[in-house]
Image (cartoon, rainbow, N blue to C red; front, side, top):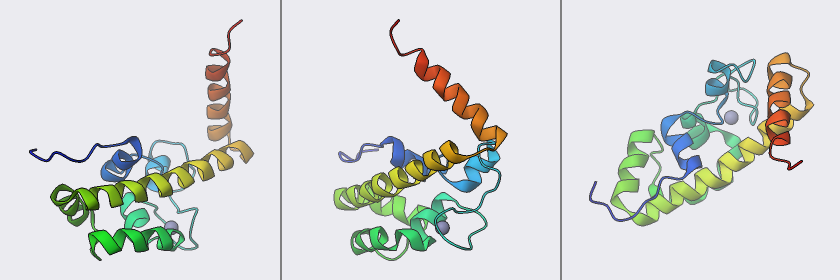
Length: 136
Ligand SMILES: [Zn+2]
């Protein structure tokens, strides 16, 4: 509460809450047919923890994170380190921005190429929403 550093960005919030661009969450809310990770071969349930600590697709980005935060990438440990140090906070935030933006882009591409009725319905909704922003 007393810390003077640390804004919670949209992508950082996704990782901290698990509500974001993760297969298990997207599947739960009906936006993906399965919870699997699309970025590695054999993870049946993509979660915030998987993205942060396990998924081999983000090993390079994780090296920078571990160098600052340490090897324990469980959410409680990461949050503890973030509240202790501005440097740790920024390292976690950078990881989240870089990795989640790539996951979001991959989700957009899946959505755009999908024939799945769940996704194409959403795509139509998005197109209509966009059309409303275009002035007459
Ligand atoms: Zn993965």
